[in-house]
Length: 127
Length: 443
Image (cartoon, rainbow over the protein chains, first blue to last red):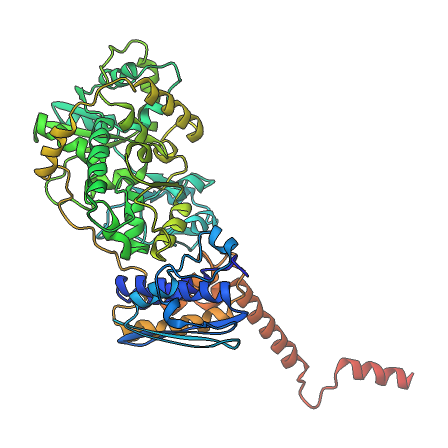
């Protein structure tokens, strides 16, 4: 688990959005979504990629990872449900707010996962 | 002057064109061009980091001095709480405030008294549960302006009350009126000078007439400390504490407060807020200077020494009763005495273009340009780092050859081409090597 670089991807996405002149509220929502997705990859996956596509009227953020996958997506969407190991929780992460926060800030959210293979999350944020 | 007033300025004759300030600036507002630093007005938040870091003292704060008192028949001093941390531990508050009268002021309204009131108002606001959390302090103008530039989405989190300096000015105006009376802030930093000259959350006739640096009157005050007739201090320990980091947090009661000082640390905390990571925190006390206001670049005392002295001064005042009861404050609160009169708006200076299509194209172009740069962030091009140079190139404010590595590459390429050209001789002339070979053969 590489916590040292946690937030780098989200920061980069935020910077590009700011330079593009996107509205502050969209930038804020995108920062939260991308940071939570980034953390999920760091905490749970073996390897993952975060990709953001900026369009004129929306923003798409996609996270794809190779990892254990989510056995019960519905359960993972519930606030406070977390499978993060205890030491991660001690660091102040893994409070079970990741996916719920992502959902709260997305206009469209798709989560696909296969146990033992990996997870794919797609979030669309309208301007 | 452009749309923004700035207290932080450059003394061209002292600037050597080194890269200290461009690297330290929290908003990347400085470039070196033609051997001199240039401040980008829209981006500068007057935090004073460049003043602190400049080895040649080429960055200065433009401020008022005591001659401003001559413009008014009557003058009121509004000393920042940090002033009390500037003198020895045994120098009492009454003499420090009294020395201001000796300097020519007719009366004193302590900003710490206003801080007493603001502490109570903010505490009540936090208990009411109004507004987004974490609420962020409005006290440090450099932090507020930093947020306008870099964290516009968090502006709504700033508490909707004017900071103590402005409240003290309102109190002074209530007692003394406008016109014949000059109201002057005794300032620890350039950020407050700008706040005096160009407030961000207030529209109307300026409440303050001058901003005089602590460092500008320190010597004169020292001379008069002993002979000064004492002025009875009215601030409690709660308000005095605002002059150092952690003091404001201590004054805000009944809430979970996070205190952060040093502008680069403030940025790190605001990034956490932006990511939604600080859900357990009710209030953030954020100060641009290390140590809080006692660390302002217009103070005299070492910030850490100043902080200790100020703590001591606050504890000495602990028995004092607040000027106004919480009930009286609640009444003032209802009359919106403490409210900001205008909303703080973003300064969208980070975007590359007003047209989003053009801006997006520029972002792509910037990425391409940045890939070609060495990524050493040396600053020799005059931009703070390679990414900033890429941005400057895309915006037409710099060229790729401003990068010394790019330039060297280019010179190397040209030199190689020269050698290549030099080898090309006209057919009748044999190259020297061949002639030498021929001579040897003949010999």
